Amino acid sequence: MPAKAGISLLNLYNRHIMLFDEIIDDTYEASEYPALAGLTQEWLETRPFAGLRVLAATPVFRNTLVQYRALLAGGAELSVGVANDSDAGAEMPCDSGVVALLRESNIPVLGLQDALKAEFRGEGFDLVLDCAGQFSACRPKYGFVELTRSGVQFYENSEKPVYVADSGIVKRIETSLGTGEGYVRALLQLGYGNVGRNGADAGGAGAAFAGKSFVVFGSGKVGQGIVLQLLREGAHVQVVTDKTRGVSPFLDANDVPVTDCNDLKSVVALVSAADFVVTATGVKGALDRPELTAALLSSKAVLANMGVEDEYGSSVPAGRVLAEKKPLNFILEEPTHLKYIDASLALHGALGELLVREAADASDKKNAGPMDPPSELEQRILSMTMQDGLIGPEIAEMLSL
Image 1 (cartoon, rainbow, N blue to C red):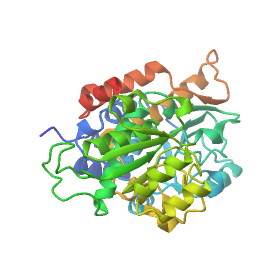
Image 2: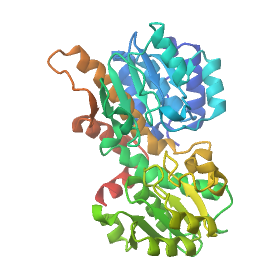
Image 3: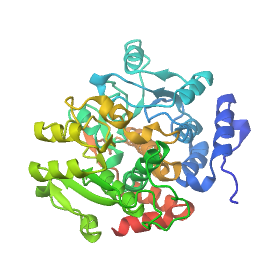
């Protein structure tokens, strides 16, 4: 068995960091988070966030403790954001037990209004690592790093620089591999799927969803990741998307039927015959069309959402959709396995470090508003993940699609 994870260096860690060490070391192997482990070791020496107030709004679950530990190792005066204000972005699920642990460890856990009040008192943040635009109303000294594509809309007119972690290749690891796996895992936890999955060949007769029909709305990174996992589990999959934007080579290569979202008659027929429907368009209310709503409400299909926003629209009651329309994988103790989200969380923090460095360099001032991650930084994170992590072969396969 690989050596247990861990940067111990207890003489540099205060009491609550030692507690994080215990939880992380008891739960994960170092090979599950090679990028964050590498940054933690580096930041213990370089201390890029020393004296800086950093708000991290990553969804709060056990695996995000690894990101918090890295930021603290870098000297950050850390606060954790858990905003649930509907007018500030999408409501973000969290693990209440981990929230309680943070508070017991004297790490501030703040909602949006708390953060704005702190700014009013002159106790604002130097850096905000946001998710889904929940803290876009803040005014951090150096700027923002946004984790998701759905959050970019809240930053279009930002007066501060905003790096978007979801603009590059690293985030594909989470969305194309981890999110789809989380959807399948959540369905299995709820009791869906065939008996005899364990030990079955991928896609074989004993696979979890052999013979079941799925309709996936959306053909982006998340949609493709869901399709990939469902094909591995033996499902019959059809995709609904906007064909005017082109069709994914991955879907073509796997002979996945694709229906244009504007062909309502065909879409209604698909939904009416499906066993499962899942949304992954990234667009709020994407399915909110009268004919489609009627088909969804009368269908026997199990409905789920894997987007941050409510993609079904108000005409479909929350109770008709698993998890009350929240992203289905968030019912899990670990919505996305750490091995799939490590690179995204590492990039999230590393882009924050970059903003701080750039602010100190008068010759490298950034424009306000959203920006893509530098390719060299992404390649560095990707290299760490593939060389030292568990999922190198999966990433290589993903990159070849």
